[in-house]
Length: 289
Image (tube, rainbow, N blue to C red; front, side, top):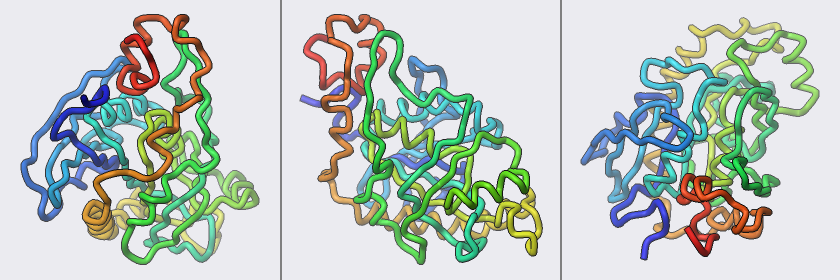
């Protein structure tokens, strides 16, 4: 019997990033899927295709045409939609600013830590009569991150700021003292929700600039970010292809049991609607649903 949210032939890998990522060589059986969730609409429709015999779902984080600000992204709907499709692993692709001299614009970082400096987001599926506390000591999946190809910085701390403005120079210099490696506006929120949904999560962070701490370089501009992103898009596609090709069918990491023993609320006290809404996420831990 399949678990809640899973079906035969389900999508097993999700990619969240720019709208052009699904335009890659070898992707077949492409279709568009709209998904409704208890948390509202995802950023856009999911583009589902087959690569190396595996079904993959692509979602443009900001909507096609980049219409949604970082704070306004419906992160819960995005990750819930992935879970509803059956996704077990999410690869996130995003632009970041470099906070270290050795991470040059154009370099790629695979962060293994996050510092969440946001203030105005819902970054949990819980509430509405149920409380759970998942562990976030290791917020990314090491097994998934190891599949990344290309020459990259294999670890680092991603500082997640609110945005949509870039940092002031004073802020950037303070973030440097916190030993952050890169700075972005989205991935810490996704990582928290992916962990609650028991989905493996890894980030391909594309360094586009030196933020504004590096006074010998030009300050960050949208034009500069887009120029570097355009150069890096083929590299990120290659990394996704290699990750999909190398990923084993079954997971051996602990991500698939991240919710085990974390739900504090007795099942008898969880409202029926909350049980129904969260069935794809908590269903396997409930006796009556």
